[in-house]
Length: 174
Image (tube, rainbow, N blue to C red; front, side):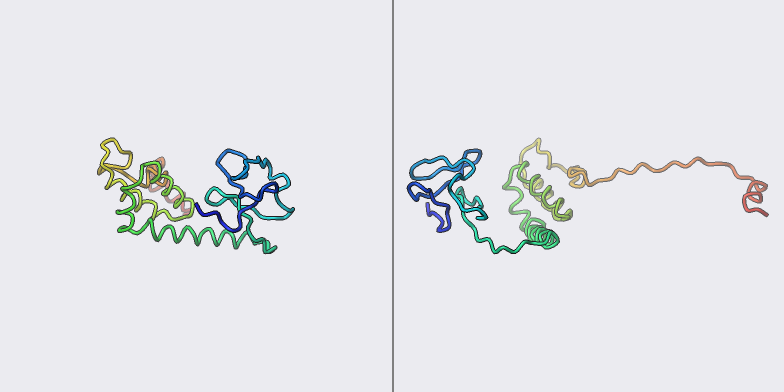
């Protein structure tokens, strides 16, 4: 396994620091435990966990505007929608995923305001799923309802009053 060049290093043996989910950081070589990264890094250093390693990333000191971050997120959702919302790609990818994985992708697309892509993807997943009791299968599957996007409107019932000619004349003020 190749160790990234920007991995955080152990202060005792210079070994790479790994990050295992739900475990404290630890040196890959000597096993030193780095709870809260004590003595590991300088103040202001930006760390990210990538591929199981604790990496030191460049901090350019430029704070991002939340509007820029939101625009970037929606841009990322647009790219995901182009992949998962494309009928051909969805028909190849969708059936190979579990129902939970398909739901997660569809729900993420909905959060990113890509509802059409979410429906396309779930329908493609359902068509290729050969499990009889699949939540997405069958001709009666409704992706909008499944994702909570369907609005079942009840018709508003207005009370009807019988209006006479005299009542109409009075109503119009004639």
